[in-house]
Length: 377
Image (cartoon, rainbow, N blue to C red; front, side, top):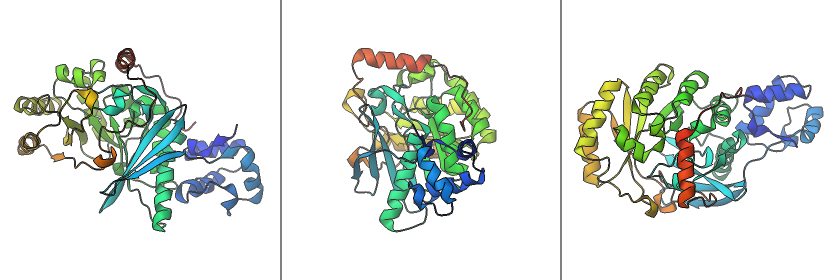
């Protein structure tokens, strides 16, 4: 079986070339053709030696993911459904704005964390994506949109690992993908413009700070352990005091001087005056410099939850801002094509019976990280 070159960061690709008896600089040439130009045909790579172009097909290939569907929203948001095999699919969302183009990328087929307000988690967990499958989302969307606009300019300026799955539970595949995004020979994104979102996998937050400290967003959603245990089951393993300590420890290596805290607004659950006061108390006690991002809940029938009233959201935001905590309310994008936050359910095989849901929650709570392999391998 030949290697998919989307599976390698630059160091991994250099090691691959050396195994073929080639100089390391050939990896840089290959890397640029793949990620900067979107090439998948070795014959197009005219600055490679002819002998290498003839050798590569026997050992390697460059393959994205099959596109099952594409939906374009009225506001310009685009959602792709990619086939990852065995009956599973993952969703990727492009969000255009005046000053940026953001791609929301999936890291798993499904999710094992099982947050109550997330339709992805409701469907259960299928498997981790490979590095190639993570990068294929960026590779396909970037070069598809370039072709459509007949432009050679970068289309995607920001990547957020906020699609399907918990990125830090797929650490070995995530880190080399991040390195490709950041590499000047790849997509050349700054660390400030690549964000990993986590529900609070504390040991992997600590590793990410050492290995590849990009911007960090933490799915908080509750100011107390009792409430967060219910909304985010992973909190039972890594409670708030550990999570906030990990946030504080991440800050010295972070590309920004704050951690983004995501907070999905749920009517009568976490949006009351007592909740905002408890949240302010949590921030004061932890000492974490944070920016709050309040997220309108996108209801789905199985959640049993309701969207907070606009007045409650505004009052919550006003109290935080008045206390000196920078707070924004996320604008809902792509909700007419189910591309908004919490709506990415994909076509994960049905794992939604009660026994399966309980098993997936137990997996999320009891998950123990293994020592990652060297990310470039």
